[in-house]
Image (cartoon, rainbow, N blue to C red; front, side, top):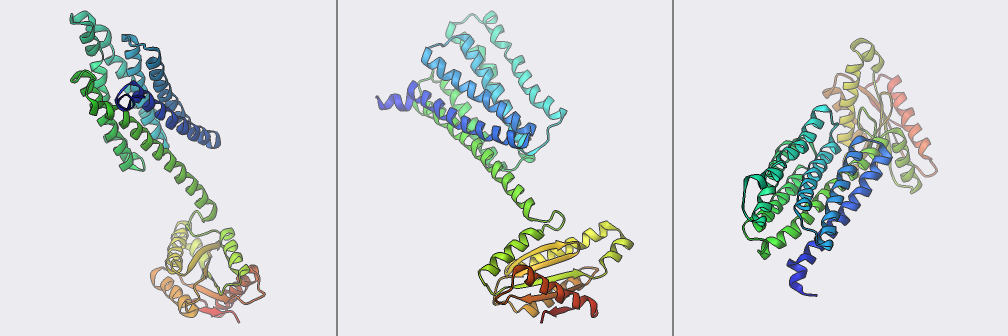
Length: 378
């Protein structure tokens, strides 16, 4: 096998296309699995767009093997390139956004405009009497230049509406360099410039690999979001009761020296009745943020139910009385409410349920002996 053919010949192009097909196949598996699990149009749209890209490169490989290089095959390939480029960028947009009629008109309008520009393919032979090679080059120059229009439109219009903006714009920059290299090599160097041939073979692989990373990281984001929603409270963003209880259980089973703090907002029902549930929700968020701030370096905070919030303190160096008093003081100074707080320390033989119940009982004593105070279980 000649090393030059491997780097710059038809074999290099064939291997480049084969690698892209593998990347596209992996992306199809991911997007199809997402669609089957979540039934969202975005994932079906992404799957269909990837199938178009796959067909585009499979046909290119077939034409290489068959030696077919007619005007019709060239036209079909560049039209497939335009359609697949528009669809895959629409798919990326849909990964982060709901698509309404306006967006569909925009993306499908780009494809329709491609067909309008493609009329030059049929008009040029009637207007220009050059050699067959010259006519072939002029037939598709309009479509090749139209690809640049698509790149610039996607570069400036899509990033503000998606995550991973830098990665997406880098991918489009790579595609722009690929398209530029391809046009220079075809129209200026007559497909004979080694550096440009290498760029044409390598840059598409990088482009689709970056798109693969965007899709893969989006899947990770979705999985993380699903996991977070399963362990956190929707309003306060603190850990929910189940997760908090499980974490306490884990520490108790290992006989670690932990504290559980149990708090209850004073006169919360009256606040809801007099100032409305929106004010109540705002207060819950404010108190939750104080709990989260204070627990950040020594444990975790959770919402146990209603206006009850809890903290698991796993750092044995924390002076619990000072810690609890600081939370009580901040709530009093930074919000329009006060809180009654109780806490309890783990002792051998206690279960997680008993430890939390002790902190709850201490909080109840604080509540029934004046409110807005801290009581230690004893």
